[in-house]
Image (tube, rainbow, N blue to C red; front, side, top):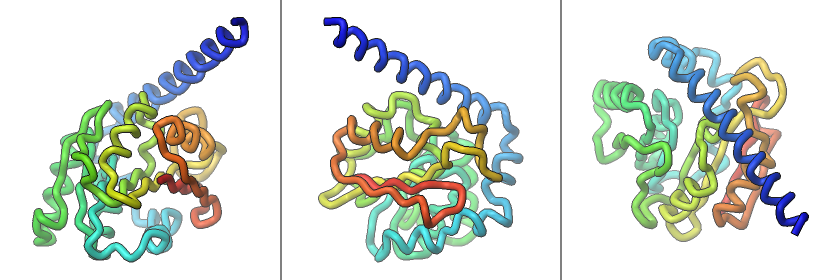
Length: 217
């Protein structure tokens, strides 16, 4: 009985600490002017450390794949996915980012069939059952609060052989990224996804200099 109480208390403590970190991360985002967020997400040197060509090479071929870019921001990866032949749901909780993506899509004369924007909720990715082949989530996992239940819904939206690809910052000081106390480790990500029902995992900490990549099916 004491062991059961201890396990429950530990689980509650972990959830509370993670929720506090998530709130801190979201507060940080909400207090930053939108123009500054766009400048950060689209900074000229991002390709150097985000390595989008190398990242997308890990999940090619992309032609005719249906992908949700969850927490798409300015569409940094969304447009690269489209350029690689995928059809994309650019999803975000912030309507300002969705309007920005729409404006870039229209300026580039990309059809809405190739890239559509979708406003999602803090507790629901709003995926239809078996709607996508891949869910890509870059620099966003640590913003989510009830990640286990959230990714149960993500899993429901994946097609057969579909998978999640999480990219986030290493839990240590790096030249890029949020304060360390806002970050989650690759082990944290794997634990949450395992509790959400994913069973096959691969972690890559070599491709990117400041970030890990977690694949989950």
